[in-house]
Image (cartoon, rainbow, N blue to C red; front, side, top):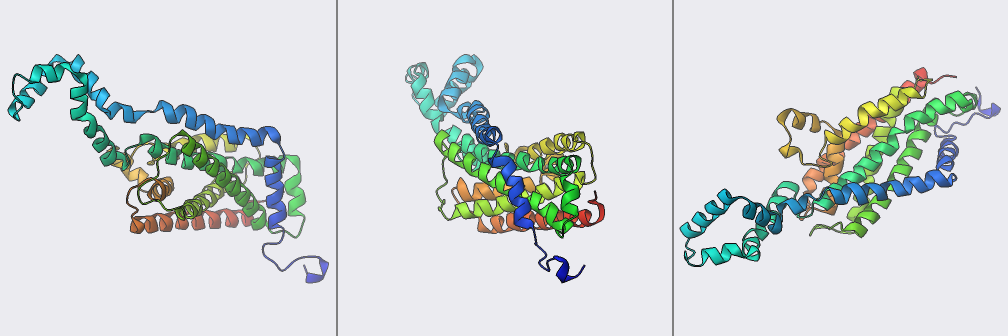
Amino acid sequence: MSENNGNSRNKLHGLWALTNRELKKWYKAPVIFTLSIIQPIIWMGLLGKAMNIGALFGGSAFTQSIMKQPGILTQLTNALSTYGMPAANIPGFLANPNGISSVFSGIGNAVLLNTFHTTSYFSFMAVGMIAFTALFTTAFSGMSVVWDRRLGFLNKALSTPVSRGVIVFAKVLSATLRSMFQAGIVIIIALAFGLEFGASFNPVFILGVFAILFLICVGLSSMFIAITIRSTRIETPMAVMNLITLPLMFASNAFFPTSIMPSWLQTVASVNPMTYTTDAVRQFLIYNTTNLGQVGLDFLYVGIFAIVAATIGITLSWKYLSK
């Protein structure tokens, strides 16, 4: 086609119009928009506070366990005697739960800090919820292609001068913007529920958080669209979402560190882009010392994933996106 028949030389012609159309389906639907905000609140309030792993390692938890186990109590008595506590003082010390709690009060924090790099498991898990929200929001991007094909809009879009790559990237961009918005909501909710920033936190790091979220969302939404681009049945993207999302989430460090996983699962987590995304966000927000070298590696890995996934998605759109 020539330039005179309305075809634009701009490779991104129509990108914002299509992206805005996708966003309007979200923010102009009050129910959907409200649910997208309520969902993170439910996850943070229920799952976040229910998984109170920090309480398992608190001084009171150790105290209750010791008081209910005579064998452990005997071992503690012998240990106190061995390390110099006068025998006459031991019965009174053990009879006072506060005394035992004082001994173990620092152990719980030490265990948490060594395992999660923070003394607040909720903070550790809350960062995982940020990645969790991004993953599930982008997972629905594949359904959009199917719906547009079934409702006839895809035929109209393919009849315009807009390139197939722009049609796909508009869906990727809209899913990314929605995911980042919801991630911001999760951070605010997490702060209200007790998210604790690390000692090295700097407000500028928030920009880094959204930068890596942008990369992972582009990569994930491109991947889901590429997998379902030829589908004409809505069941297909739903099945793909159910098959991929949970392994991506739980075979990462979203809820538990990879260091305490089985060796085979550590191998899987080491190639999972969600692992690197979550690590970078934790480095920015909750770790006491930010390892900039590791953050650079996280960005490099997630960036390569985003570029490769977006390239595959756009390439497949040229070949397979049809009326």
